[in-house]
Length: 296
Image 1 (cartoon, rainbow, N blue to C red):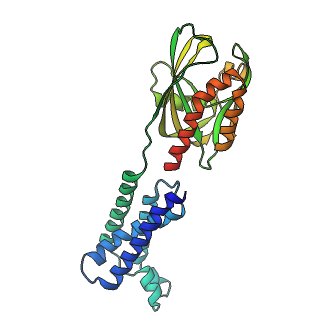
Image 2 (tube, one colour; image 1 turned 120 degrees about the vertical axis):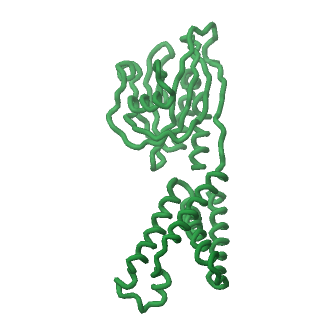
Image 3 (cartoon, one colour; image 1 turned 30 degrees about the vertical axis):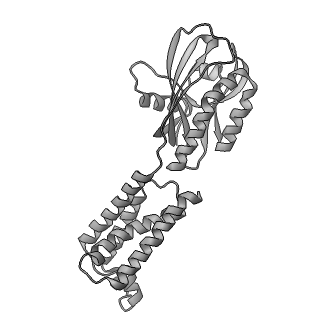
């Protein structure tokens, strides 16, 4: 976390020195009235990121709204309305001269900050894993199944998974698994993952990123799975819409875990064959999801 804050701290200090220098030594008609206003919104964004380096994806928008609001207070001469016009400090701090050009400069500064973050933000390439089922002997596959799955996290950093309690051909097991399922005919992947998360978790989600694709096998039922994994943020929750098999055969329920708890749960599930197959597929995906979240 410190490494994420440091660039913003350095940028804030450099911009602060630049603004002080402009205020003390520059008396021109461009740098002082315009360039200084561009820099001030960048400075505000860097200060906020230095304190809160994660989240607040619309920070430049909020910074612009704040700066524009200050400019509106100058338009209505809030200092005079409050009876503070005799205070040199408050008059200087809040300002008393409105200009449309200032608002344009604030917008340019916020746009520059947004562009800089977009350019320098670390980019993680999607994973592509090809796994074999080492728990049951391979004989043949009779179908390929396109599957969508998601690592779902809410605004508080809680992760959502399915817990399945099974007693079938795969054995007796209680396992953790990402929510998801088969892609239906005519569906694109995004539509499919939204539907699956609505059915199994009751969640409406924002798709944040593609995590990757995992090819794996269930040799016991002769199936090849092509799993498409997404990182999703839960926006709201409602009632689940699970199928009869999901309720009565797999006994699905929702697990709410921290990242460390989820990793520990996958490790615990390695005590059974099916759990080992699922952990091999999903633990690397969970780790990559965490890495992606740390860049947002």
